[in-house]
Length: 138
Image 1 (cartoon, rainbow, N blue to C red):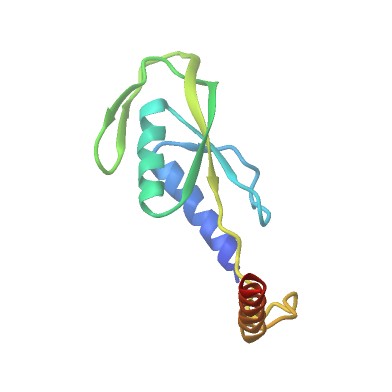
Image 2: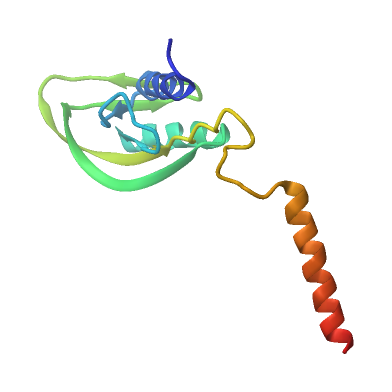
């Protein structure tokens, strides 16, 4: 069975490919890694807009070249990008971007790293406030 992280990265991989991009990060992604992708400029804008709408963070990483068939014509539609191909191969400029994969939350609210409880923190704030008030009134 796949973890939530593995399922999310696999779904993002399929999503990027379905919209006409290429995932260049080695899969499976480790926890804390971003997914690096490439796409033709118009496609990259569409992918980034859709991911941003779903609350993902997309970081542009510049441009690169990729060997692609000649005369690629992109026709951008709201849901997909249609490509028409002609013979031959040549380098094309592609946009490079990273998708920040959110980290999995620990299974329990109390991860064991926090010694103070929420009540302890509130009590400390209250005591600090009282101390500051006492110092001002002197």
